[in-house]
Image (cartoon, rainbow, N blue to C red; front, side, top):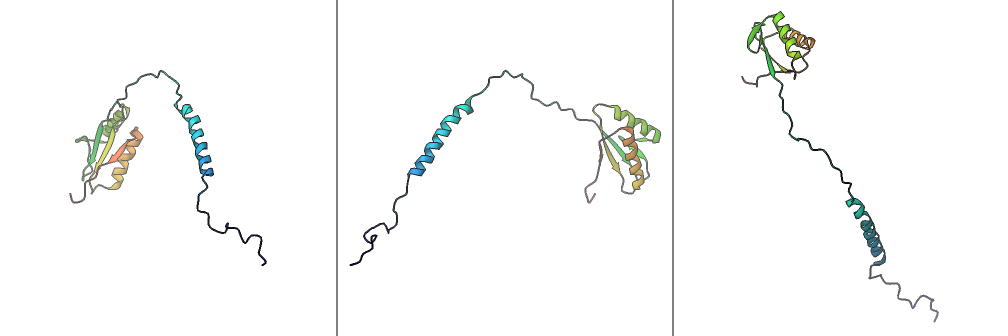
Length: 139
């Protein structure tokens, strides 16, 4: 009867239990870390901060509507103006505080050159906020 020295061991079977020691070690380390860090997080410095109003001051800039009709006439807020008066009104609007927004409303039949000249005059006069007014499709 030649038996091997390991033939009688029953260690060949599967292990039916989970080793809980590493899990308990990790949980204890986490517990210690949290116990140390929570008092540090709750530590606050008392500072007497100044009080300020949180309401925003709303000053909307005025709007200036400049329209160019099909004949090439320039209208400043629905009043017809010539080139000299237009330059004077642009310079006056540029000096206002806050600076008004220029809304440019050009007829479809006006050549682009006329619109570009008006935009150039507004920029040269000091106006920085220029917007285009368009009509929805179908009107």
